[in-house]
Amino acid sequence: MKRNSCLLLLSALVLSVAARAELLSFVVDPDQTVVTLSGQAAGAKLEPQGPGGLTTRFQGTVVVDATATEVLFPGGSRVIPEEINSWEPGPDGANGSAPASYGGKATIGSGFFVVNAIAATRRLSFDVLSPPLALSGGSFDAEGVLFQFVETNNPTLDYRTSGLINLREGRILAGLATNKVAGASSLITAGALQTLTLQLDATYLFELLTPGDSSLSLSGQLVATRVIPDGPPVLVVAPVEPGSPSMTLSWPAGFKLQKSTALNPAVWGDTGAVSPAVIPFAAAGEYFQIVPQ
Image (cartoon, rainbow, N blue to C red):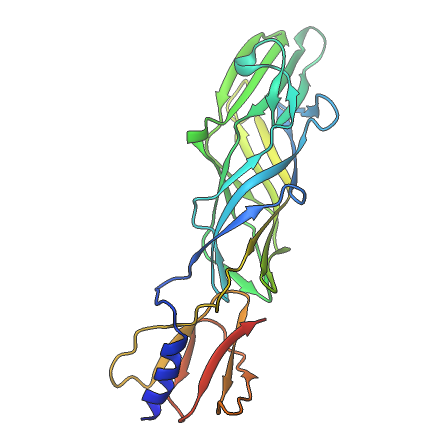
C-alpha cells in the first residue's frame, strides 16, 4: 500500500512519459545577438569595407534538448546573419554590390606582387551541434559546440581579386567551426521566460589561394528565448518494474523537486535532488512536486 499510494499521486502529475527531454525551440533575439566577423585572407588581415562591414545581427531558431543537469544541441537549429547592407562584389564576384551579411577587404603582399581582395558573404545559415554539456546553476561550458554551415541554404563567399592575380568567384562554404569560449554560457528560467545565452568564438578555415591560407572567425554572443507554455511542467516517472525498491523521476531544466509528507496541509521542502533522481520507496505518504528554481 505504501508504494501504491505514492505511485498514484505521482501518476496524477505525469503528463507524458519519455526516455529523453522534450526538444525546445528558442527564438534568436536580433537586438541582443550581434556577431563580429574577423579573419585573414592568405595571411593578410581582413578589414571592413565600410562602417558595419564586419558586424551584423543574427536571427533564427536554436533547438535545445535540456534536462535539469544537461544541455544538448541535437541539430535542427537555423541561425542566420541578417543581410542589412550591400557590399562588394556582387554575386560570383561581379562588379557592383548586393545585400550581404558581411563585407571585407584585404591587401595581400606589396609592390608589384600585391593582390587586392574584396569579399562578401551571402545566404549564411548555421546549425548548432554538441554532445551533452553539464548544466549547473543555469550555467554550462560551451567550448566545443559546433557551428555547421547549412549547405542547403547555399552559403557563399563572393570575392574578387585584382593586381597580380585577377579572380572572380562565388565559393560555397561548407564544414564546421568549433567554439573556443569556455564557460560563461547559460540557460536561465525567470517566470515563464527561458533565456539561452551562448558565448561565441568560432573559426572556419578555407582556401583562397592555397589550402588553409584563409580563415573566418565569428565572435560575440547569441541570445535566444522561449516562453514556457501555460500549464504545469512535466514530471516524468520512468517505468517501474514489479518489486522494484525505487522509482526514477525526471523534470525539465529550470525546475526543482520538492517533497511533503502530508497534503492537508502540505509542507513542501526542497529535496536537493537533480534530474533524473532515484526515489526509494522508503515511507508511506511521500508526495512530490516540481516548482521553478
